Image 1 (cartoon, rainbow, N blue to C red):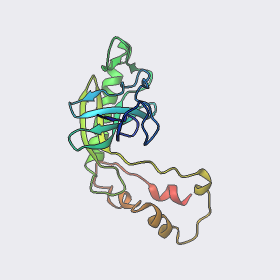
Image 2: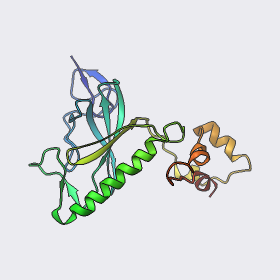
Image 3: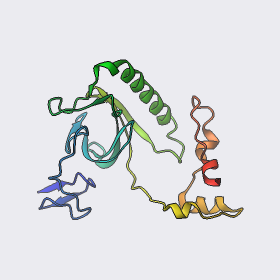
Length: 196
């Protein structure tokens, strides 16, 4: 019988360690993050936490409806909420932070709904589901393996045709600048960051 790896969301046979990525499904995800194998909306199977920051966490997940890995972003602001062994998957907000939490979650949802409307632009990941559950909010987008760029690469002086090289290597990275002005004030200045 095959098993789904919570590290890469590929199926494998026999054993506890995935032959594709080396992840062990016997690993336990530390609080406050969602436990491995958690099912959300009877559709998304939560895998390992990929990264976290002050706003929340990102997990690799498996979309059981589309039969593909996806990226799940969870609103979990550091310092004002969390999970405990007793709360299960429900987020518990500190009593003195409830008003702030409610304001922040509304902002999170508004921001990602705006980003979701930009799905036609190739420079932005397509968000195709936004929902609330477990006293928090989630977004779901296509999962893509990240490309790491060494710092030294970013510091190389560029000539007058730098755009051609970036286009060839990374695709349409300027589309968002060309189409962002009509989407509720969301603006991404990617040109500046590439020139400096």
